[in-house]
Image (cartoon, rainbow, N blue to C red; front, side):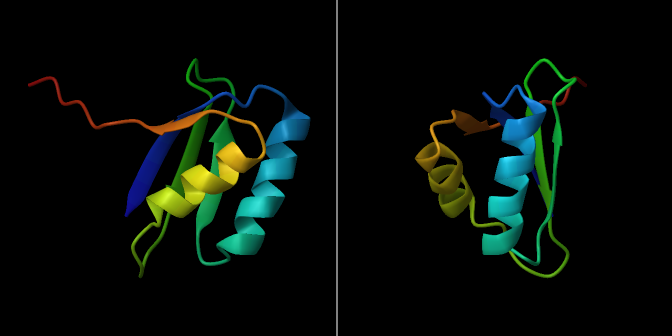
Length: 76
C-alpha cells in the first residue's frame, strides 16, 4: 500500500528532521520526500500493514507543517 501526501516542507533540513521523526514512530514504513515536486510530496509505503493516516497527519502538523492526502486521479 502507498499513500502520497502534499506538504509544506520545502527545506532539506525540514525533510531530514521529519524523516527521522516518522521513521522512529513508524519503523515499518518506507518514507521519503520529493521536494522537487510542486506539491512537496511525502510518500509512504508499507507491505504488510495499513498506513495510519491520522497519526501521520497529526505528527507532521505537530511540528508546524501542513499536510494533506493527495487523492488518486485517473484520466481515462
